[in-house]
Length: 253
Image (cartoon, rainbow, N blue to C red):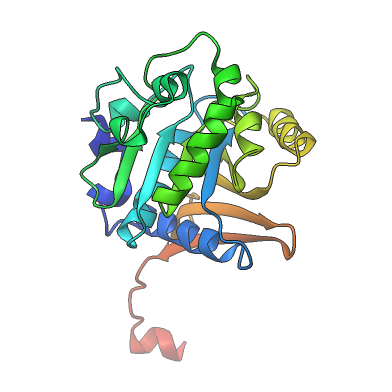
């Protein structure tokens, strides 16, 4: 089942990967003290970098902490959230924006308490126009009034403008980059595109890191966090192996 594979923070609560998502949750909570972040877009420079997995687990981590969370599929070109949560894709965000209906008719509960999902719905021929519409702005305003946090899974920004459009109406953007997959030039271009619309880039998540050969510990996550007021810093989560106690002879040598 796809949910078991993708929803790590719910299905494997004691795993190091889940702890990494909790750390990301904490950093997001403290990244803006004066104006708490309520709406966040997650995107990447290209495909297959893990943005959907990342946003799904961050949203679940917030829900586990007691926040009422809405996870909306803003990727109207290749939507995946309905597959992860086993939800019918017949109605969702695109349908709400066209009909201007009631949010409750397009939101689905999940197996994670406090986590609700709004799938993409009918794949439209004009995603960019829908996302930049007044109906979208009204939906976001209503959603922020009903939920503590609203997350959007957006398409890769290097391919289409959808993520940049969403970033102009949301409080912040997270860029996901996959080790061994991301192209450096493409990543810098993605950052430039977000900067062109004055997006608030609150962090960069580097995932799919491999275990370092010969190291005495296992890296289970790595992220690079940026904040305009405090600069940038790196944080490497690690889980050290237990060392074998040395004998008295070894201690005396």
